[in-house]
Amino acid sequence: MELRIKNLKLIIVFILLLSFLIRIAYILTLDNTLLTGPDAGMYDKLAANFLSGKGLILNDGRCSFRPCLFPLFLAGVYSLFGHSYLAAKIILAVISSFTCLLIYWLGKESFNKSTGLIAMGISAIYPKFVYYSAQLCTETLYMFFLVLSFLFLIKYRHSLFFFHIMLAGMFFALASLTRSILFAFFPLVLIWLVIGMKSKKKAFMHFLVFAFTILLTMSPWIGRNYRLHHAFVPTTTEGGYSFWIGSNPLATGGGHCYSSDSTAFDKLSEVDRDRLYYKMGFDYIKKNPSKFIQLAFNKFLRFWRIYPHQRDEIKKGVIVDLRIDLKYVIIGGISFGVILPFFIFGLIVSMFMWRKVLLFHLLIVYYTLIHMMFFAVTRSRAVIMPFIIIIASYGVLVLLCGFSNNHLSEGI
View 1 (cartoon, one colour):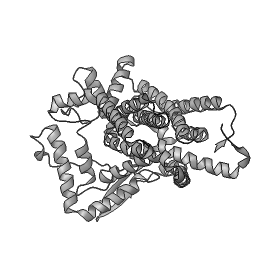
View 2 (cartoon, helix red, strand yellow; view 1 turned 45 degrees about the horizontal axis):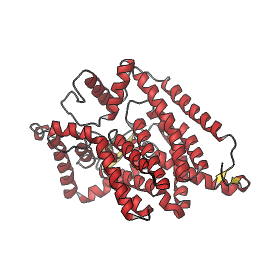
View 3 (cartoon, one colour; view 1 turned 180 degrees about the vertical axis):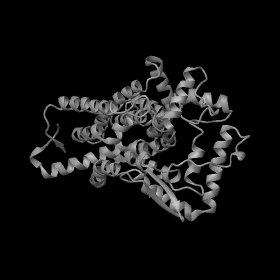
View 4 (tube, helix red, strand yellow; view 1 turned 120 degrees about the vertical axis):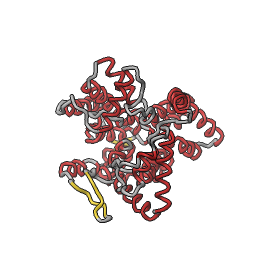
């Protein structure tokens, strides 16, 4: 199922340039001498400390609280161009634009050229992608590595070329070193391989290669963490705190940071603090199972919400949203609000080829469930939007072909 389109390469180049120009235009509307948000401040400080010889360490002594790759990216930019936020944003705009091209290739490999082209066009103008290309946060770099990893996984399934599974593992590791949430997903790749391959033994052996490549790529960071903490810390020590944020007496399901009894943490190591936060979260769940179910449902709604929460609080035991900005409602409505029904339709019409898109399904379900356990904001969904957009684009293609049979062709 394809659309007959002439000058495909020219269209791809046009969309690629358009995506870059949109991102640069947005960046130039900002005050690029300031940082936005606490995450950007942390990554900037980590990069500055690394360049000053202190290492990837925050000023309060936390050595492994955040993943390493984005601060190292910033450190590389700062070493070349000085402490320039603008330079970092321009490079992120380039990365974001090329991610649109990767989304085309992934859509082409997963479905067909028409799906890939539609997905690339949507990605070029999707507001969240444009926004995060201008923020010194992990989203843009993470999506680049994540889409690359999935692209090579899909290519491996088509070709069974051994090198593809190794590249997939390497880019998966780089994505995990950019945002640690991905790391626990890698066992699900085995499910995808076993279901999709005739030889289960070969699937298992190649999964071991995939897993070994991940661990090999991450080994410098894992080794560094073991040297500092004398414990196995494959990614970060942030997980426990993030888990407790979503499961404590004041939790609303969002990502608001709460203070805890600091005296309980005074003499604990960074790793022990991480474990204590996990324990506190699980203890709360055990004592309040009905509240946990309520929070999990609220996190699900937050994750799939069309527009972002601006602020919320609890009033008389009820979660109340405050300060809903109309512009975010409008932007969300004309972006994700439009994509969502096509995504649902794409899921339905692609059911007959479910094995081809099972990897996408596993990632989307994994992200939904993990955020129902931790905490959820619409920002959490942004990094899996490439896969949602590809499935939505297939839904668009089916509708276009259904309404325009005269445009059907065997290929573009």
